[in-house]
Image (cartoon, rainbow, N blue to C red; front, side):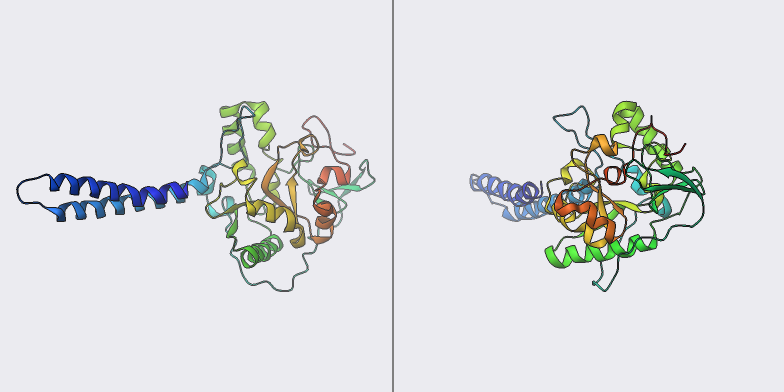
Length: 312
């Protein structure tokens, strides 16, 4: 698209000028070339403005049609990115890398032990939140209270994201950021209902969480966008930025949350842009030398609206 726009900005004014000069040369009376030159410059300026507007709008698109499915949509809409700061985009600025441990986020003590997963990991419920082996979990089985509202991305997650995006910038020149971080219960409800109205409940459930079941509400997950690349849509899948993230995110404590071909485990279609912070130790295990393992598979969890949490 950018190449086409660049060619148009140069070619259209030139063609106009050539046609104008030819017409002036056919005149027997006095010829006026200045008017043609000025008009060509004006046309070029207008095209440049249009180009800039198009390139700025394209990265904010949220959905694109997939030839192999009835719909290929995502969890975020353009409208969402214009909501209040605490519930919308979380721009993470890049900065120079420094020593950072990417440790597991400390979770509250106490609570009720509900039992063990199929793989033997302890499940606890603390203030309405589910923790598996100490990690906060949110999927189609394990929900979050409606009033749970951290208000923004966790500070540890922000710091780790800073480091990751700075490394991508230094190593590859990529300009990436967290386009959608924390989302409240109310915001998720609005998003989900809109998708249901547009695509039907069955389709919406494949790519959007019902209110109370979204990882975005935890403040531990975000979606990634990159300059001049499709944003939060399947067009991002084959970009160099997506490849870099898949191969390097674990170094900064992040996991590719919705793995390709693992919809039966996570409950959601592949999302190359959605990352969740778990700390470097677990992230490296789930990275599995490039063959990502899902949280559900690793801990032995279900992710289905028809399933109940362990012990309930």
